[in-house]
Image (cartoon, rainbow, N blue to C red; front, side, top):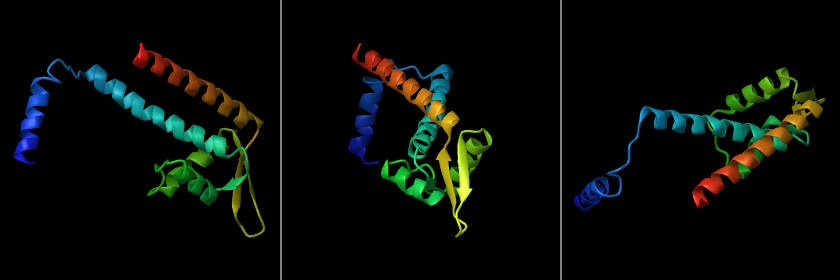
Length: 132
């Protein structure tokens, strides 16, 4: 690191961050927030599957939304799809060419609606805290 940046870091440590206490409780909350983003990814998947899509199509749409979670791990997306299917939220079908399509069923649409409401209320709460 350049000397001038080292000096800036020291000044910020001494002033800006001097009262900052990062406890185990804070670390736990950060981890929980990171885990919550998984829910955001699941919600995005479910929103996209209102209309029938292949796993490949879904990956393209997720990347279009800026979601890069599955970029180097396509298997993670298929694991999520299979879990949603096992839990009864998706229906799937194969076409003549052997391509599998996924789509939300009614139970999945209800869950997606619930998740959208929860996400919206979290954002409103966070906004109130930030602006409060």
